[in-house]
Length: 185
Ligand SMILES: [Zn+2]
Figure 1 (cartoon, protein in one colour):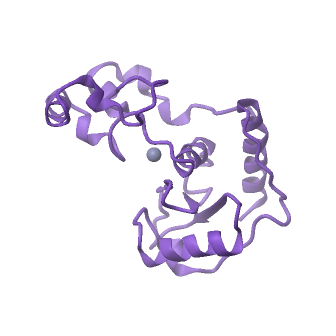
Figure 2 (cartoon, protein in one colour):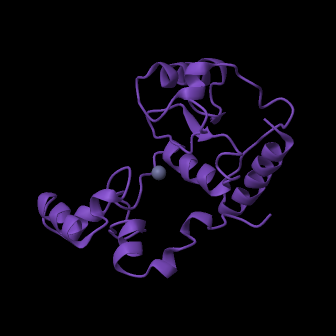
């Protein structure tokens, strides 16, 4: 954990207030180093030793808090994987260095923590990234474009996902999608 991480989280906290969301973070009391190999190595696998321990720590030691585990990952190559969903009591994030200080990823996975799904179907968009795969997906999921409504929330229309547009529509328009700023800091 480093001071940059605390600074970024504090800026995340202040910028989300613009969206009507209020987070509290005490930079001294609200984070600590946790030496735990299972949690360090966990991925998005419900019921694994790492996610079970992370759920237990979050719910037993920090009830009512949004708990985020920043982890390095297994082996020499740091994980780039961030995850959460309503089945977890925490958000799993890569280390801040491994994620390129990606505040957008933190916002993304906190969205999953609160139960939001992707606007496209599935956990990734490779099932619908080509014309023929998208057509097949629609055909086998009801036969209408509503098959692509991943989050079932009407504020976003059914869509095939980022990769579909990069491959089939206009890669230039999607080139910076992973670096969209959620706020200015
Ligand atoms: Zn996601």
